[in-house]
Length: 143
Image 1 (cartoon, one colour):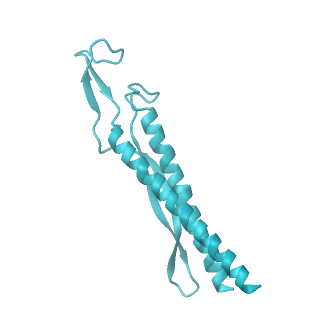
Image 2 (cartoon, helix red, strand yellow; image 1 turned 180 degrees about the vertical axis):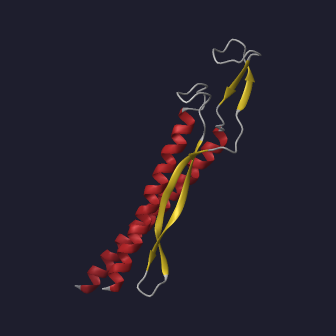
Image 3 (spheres, helix red, strand yellow; image 1 turned 30 degrees about the horizontal axis):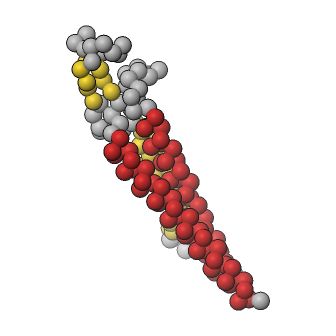
């Protein structure tokens, strides 16, 4: 019975990875969609958002902690990257000197993050598919 439990725990771990990467994909898409927003309800330009992951740790009966997957700790504003300033005196959000502050979203970085997130999501799908194939083989052997 322990083997079955491990089989399903592996599937659960892959599912947590897929769920977390989906949030990262959505966040990257939101960053790209807002890459030219110079005025938000909070004031100022859109701030790039980043996803923070953390492990899901389960304490075993013997006191050991085992990794049970990953989850999103939170989606926070990127306070490290600087905003881009462009001279555009005709822009409605230009300051008195004609400078417009644009979001701290870099399209190249966002595309790299998107590719990484999609590949990680696909890797977790592959893991789940392998678990399903293993379970199918085990069932056929048991017949």
